[in-house]
Image (cartoon, rainbow, N blue to C red; front, top):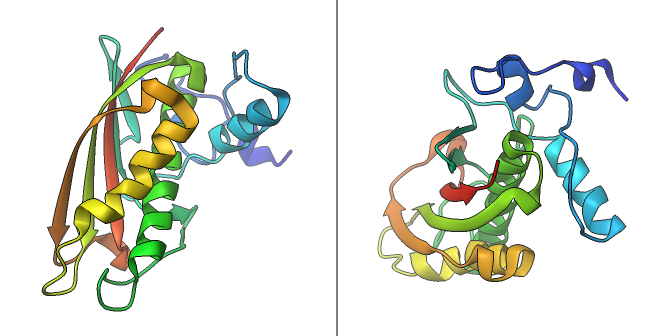
Length: 185
């Protein structure tokens, strides 16, 4: 394993530092009764939480509630989807981008809380969709994220949701998601 994954967390939440919350941190251990394939996927996801694009942390857990910063459809510094929905990004591609953002939100919580089994309930999902003029199907785009959460978490993935059309998003992304979830310590 690369040295960058051997760094130890020193954050205020666990007393070990911000490095534990970013992409270059050591992966958290998964404590789950999930199948080996699911545990491997969780381990890979937990070891690849994207580094924040500014002076903030990906997740704060306070009194059993995880607040996840906005996630773009990217891996590391590479934006995997770009453009405006309804112009140069179709609904199907935007749904894939939203599903990836949902996976990244789960990965961020996994890393901060210690595993997907720590998620008690997704409470709220907010999606921002970079929309071409006249595009009004933001809720259809967000179904990609909602479907992914329910696929992965079952009833624990059912949530309230807001879909917002915006003119632009950071880095030219078509979708950005933030999440609030109840977690078990």
